[in-house]
Image 1 (tube, helix red, strand yellow):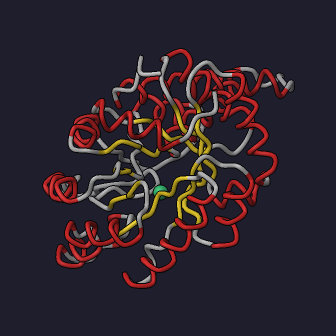
Image 2 (image 1 turned 90 degrees about the horizontal axis):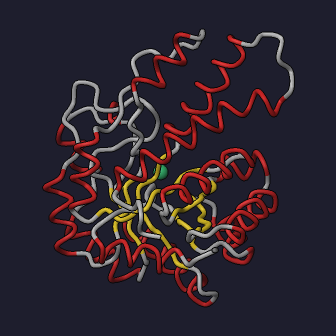
Image 3 (image 1 turned 120 degrees about the horizontal axis):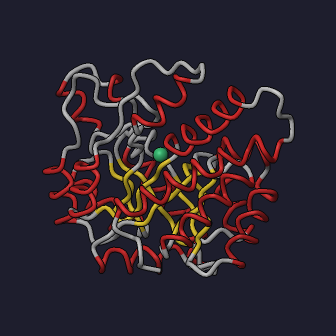
Length: 306
Ligand SMILES: [Zn+2]
């Protein structure tokens, strides 16, 4: 069933687990996410980035998500991921998403507060909840020095002030993860003591972005069948579990699902070079996605929580 994101995340916060939020770009990915959640009896969040909206259109992705949500036995929420353009965020609020993320983290603190507050007012009037971001979740390689890294990670005291002033429902924190498949090269990992300090000051559910694990098995499958990835690195299971233990209630994963999709496609194209039925080409990708999402759901502790 379609369920409010806030309800799902407050329940997760109380229960001490996190809900998986996975990005959708097409029907197969969305279907795999909901199927995995059903098999795990877990709540789940399907989210669309501005990139996916440019690719498939908001109406299309919302229709797919709604249909799957309505037909599902587990709670499914539709969420706008990283809305940086106010017109896209407004459109999503009107269109019927259960929650939106307004990402004003590139702006100075004062402007981020002001814009986030305006989005919250608009969203709450329609029963939509808002995720906001403070700090920079970038590529870890973007931080030249430790000092610079610390300056761009979420400041706990600022986080308290930010949530109080904006009245946002969830807060995405920068504690050392980065988007994409290349993380932590020669650097320290998640800043858990920072997370603990944020948790002590902020009551709303916290969100972790860039949490792909980049499983070696998928990387191997892709490379065995002609793909080249270099040396991708992901967040360790231990770090992810520790983050959940310390207050992370929503975990965003995109890259792992992309890797699973690619692994399935590469395998079938290599093994069945005369196959040209798109459904048969996509079936192994679907299975790979379902299995990685199920694994992730179990890791986050949300299995059986639907
Ligand atoms: Zn993100």
